[in-house]
Image 1 (cartoon, rainbow, N blue to C red):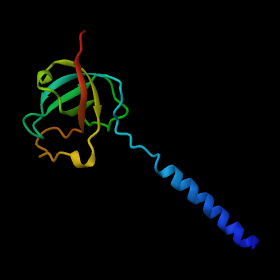
Image 2 (cartoon, helix red, strand yellow; image 1 turned 60 degrees about the vertical axis):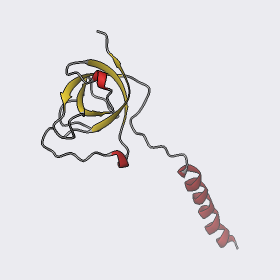
Image 3 (cartoon, rainbow, N blue to C red; image 1 turned 90 degrees about the vertical axis):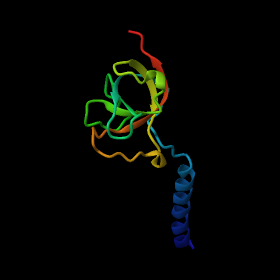
Image 4 (cartoon, rainbow, N blue to C red; image 1 turned 120 degrees about the vertical axis):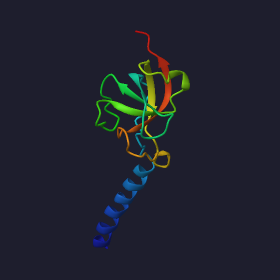
Length: 123
């Protein structure tokens, strides 16, 4: 009986730990409430005529590393901000798996981000 209890108790504890923690796991998509300074660099060649590239002033650690220094494709950038050289501040999120865009690799291969909020940067 004691041997059976020694086998069942650890199994119950492990079961409670794994089931209680499993529902609380959140996926970090890189989105937050902070604004990041960037410059609009123009249209990309790779992923369609209306997708613009932006370059962050500093490295954003929550984003995948870009082979081109802090350059990203800015999805959902509003039309009024699609001007090369325009200084902006943005909030963003990473794309979900079903939101990935297939590109033709004719231009720069850049990571994508979705623009959540944007405002003009007054310097």
